[in-house]
Length: 293
Image (tube, rainbow, N blue to C red; front, side, top):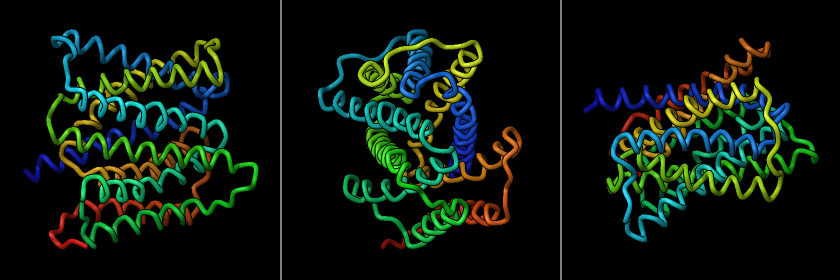
């Protein structure tokens, strides 16, 4: 059982690495694609791939209970339409490091939601890990925002809250075992895509896409989205949502390395301290204690 848990954690880390690479790819793609349109095309292609996989495996299960359908719609809207769509908008308004910093408040949103909706209690050790990880995020990004960045900050924080809701809702749904991970990911992503299409038509409209951007979109759709979200939803079956949120915080270190290698950005000593704190916090939160707050 413990070996399965370790493998699940490693799987979660692989997904966070794929998502870390997305920050670099999105920033490149945003040079000629509007954010919501970018997100819509990315997730629509990923949805089509997942849908075809479901057809090969025997089709998507229909005739679900109304309560289950409402739950699936809520997951799709929070996770994809707002959680991911607003993140694209945030990346168009703020540097990638600023977006990453703000999203590190997501574990706080997750804990509050789990305590209210799922009545989950966390141990003092896990709470310490969360505090250390958030402290590491603060040390890593000592950012002072100007008034012009307020809109971007608000949008990214809303994205973080929506993503937290997605994780909590997904965790509670997966516990019931109503759908397999593939069918669940396909149906919720399909719902989220419909929401993204609506937002794109309302605020931006559709535009043209260059060859480089198509290459980025196809890679992100197939690998960083279809494959990654399928794997992520599987990990939600075995780990708590706030534990996975802390794993996501390791993206601070991953994005720093990717930025250094591919964008030539400098990593300062203060950033290194922040990286170490986040990694320590992510490790501590994996220690399961029976002692509750």
